[in-house]
Length: 137
Image (cartoon, rainbow, N blue to C red; front, side):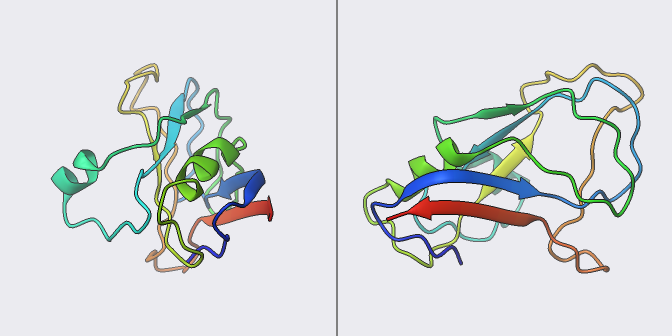
């Protein structure tokens, strides 16, 4: 649940995933989008995930440095993504937000399965990604 009132101005936002594994191969280029929906639901399968409408705002997270398992890493500022979502008609404080982080545009050099893997909310160590948002009303 994200508590941002309708009409708020997003001044800063990022997410911090915890590395699931140590990944030190170079050339990782990814993109961040939001789901263009005021009240997204849990994904049911990969087809559902792929079919979700994304925000026009997109943030490139490129040249991601090596990761060490268990460490937190901060994304670039994603305020444009969050702003687009909270500006949607019908947005209400307390609604959920979905952030997509992927390389479906195939921008990463394919060197030995180069990737960065993060722990999910249901990981055994209970270290979900952190979403941080600053706003003014």
